[in-house]
Length: 209
Ligand SMILES: [Zn+2]
Image 1 (cartoon, protein in one colour):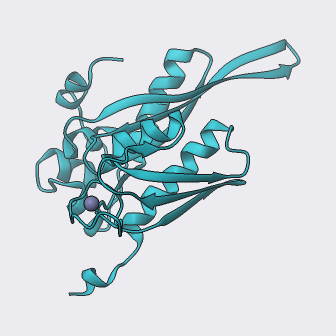
Image 2 (cartoon, rainbow, N blue to C red; image 1 turned 180 degrees about the vertical axis):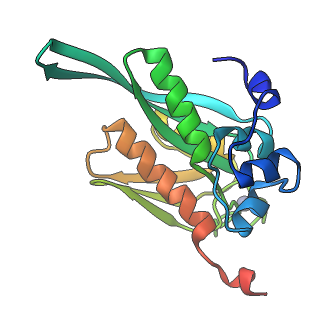
């Protein structure tokens, strides 16, 4: 796959909303969502969000019996984020690891969410967006994740996968409680993504003003 810069430069949008983004008539993710659009072409993500970074969260070997014998493929889960309030998670399957990762990275771009940050920690009260504004919960299958706002300087009290996702989202301090089969990395990652997404979807009293 060519570099992202090449891809954006050579990008020919196939959709109306893709053209609006390419022509600079929609310039932010907030605006896109407020207009009721979704990211339907992965290139839109890189145009709307600067400095998207990628991290491979999980790679799993998948073996399947067929008439011709055993078929091997890989399933990858990739997170993308700008370390500043935007996170995405995606998965991809292919015969080769590199292709599975690229597919997952493109899928993650189409699955971006804005993360509402804040200082919801009663011990802190600094008002800076270093943590979460309130407690949120997310689920994927039997895995349940609870994210709790933490005071400044706490760091990310989470497992390795949790730390990667929270860092990409731009969260510096929080506690993570995980329940269920939390060693299932893709489910853990999707449950955390679900929780982060809820910070944006939840309507809080300040929004009414
Ligand atoms: Zn604080």
